[in-house]
Image 1 (cartoon, helix red, strand yellow):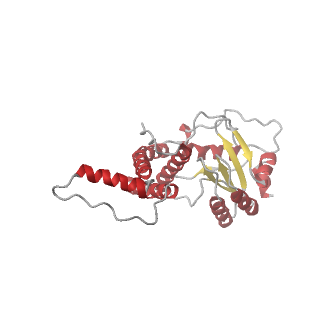
Image 2 (cartoon, rainbow, N blue to C red):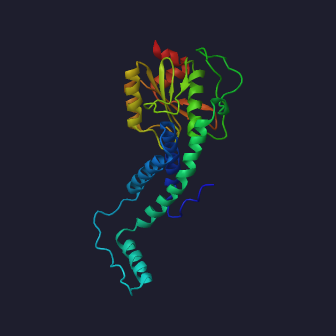
Image 3 (spheres, rainbow, N blue to C red):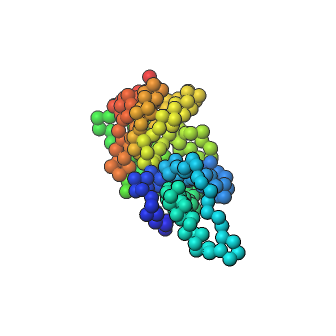
Length: 272
């Protein structure tokens, strides 16, 4: 069980916070290292995110003096509260949201570790038959079916299943080690999967385009919630096949010219 989010947290930030932190935990699990290092990494990341959303004031007057031996601790506490309410009203939301993220981090890291220990067979994403009706390519796997839930690790296997269904050969999901920004790779393609609430940024697309150039392959990106306008432009110029997927409905939509071509003629049409 995860603790309830604080009432002070603006609800429009709740899902993005949760999804980004869940993805962060999955990345750390794949990279290896100690649990303590992972917790420190998440703490550093979380506080940067919090400071970005609830920035601290650039100037603060001196804090109230601490009570002496015979001073009133209660009065000092009241003075400190008034101090922050007056000069740094976001202080309390930063504190409460930070504590909530830290309490959730242990469970998220444990979940990510558990997923990485499971064999691929325990993360099914495809149907038992291949629908070849009217296709312009030769599927190498089954068409993915709708899923009731999907974790970041499952999303990587889902992307692999879509690549195989679209005809890519030699597909494999990266192992629990540093993968250089590649979640799925095949004979001709390198794929990145972004399973979070925020649209994919241009930096992410630019990174996989760079990796593909080094590897001599074609970049493919799968996003749960689309792309920013700048990311779409980077993908178009970089020749990336951009897709937006829905695990609930079992659908895949193109978000770039190469993605559109792949959905019509199969991924191997991009190699010609």
